[in-house]
Amino acid sequence: MTDEDWMRLAIKAANQAGAISEIPVGAIVVHNEKVIGTGWNKPITTHDPSAHAEMIAVRQAAKYLENYRMIDCTLYVTLEPCPMCAGLLVHSRIKRLVFGASDYKTGCAGSIMNLVAHPSLNHQIEVEHGVLQSECSSMISDFFKRRRAEKKLEKESKFTK
Image (cartoon, rainbow, N blue to C red; front, top):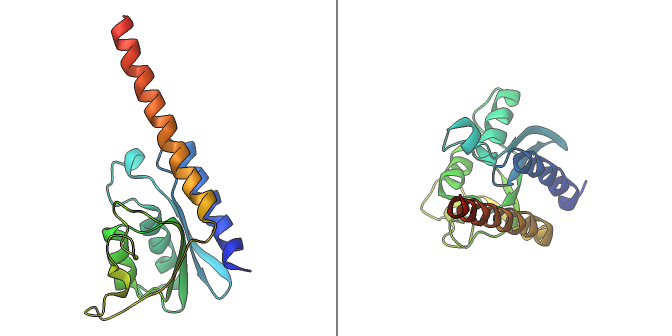
């Protein structure tokens, strides 16, 4: 399978997040051409600030491998990892990171900083960015447009009561 094929699976996971009104971010961990971890954002529904798609997918993969190291694994994620998730990827020794949309507010795989390839750390990750970028970016943009419209309607309905 190609990076685009794997990213389509991450997009399916992101749709799961969107279905529960979470920010639509999805992630999968692939090892030996097999998905061994899948996650989507759940911090709102689980009341857990660490319940990002990457965290969930990596935890699942670690259980599958029975190892906290993700040697020879690739993480596919629809949005560039935040500082927390980038740190997780370095600590877990993910070999390769492939992401769709860049995050110019919190992205730590090249946008605001490049934590995953920082030369002072004991592990650097190969990064491929922009895979199915337009689809991944649209999911996020559409979600926030809907959310703003909902909040506007909610605000307007308070004034009409």
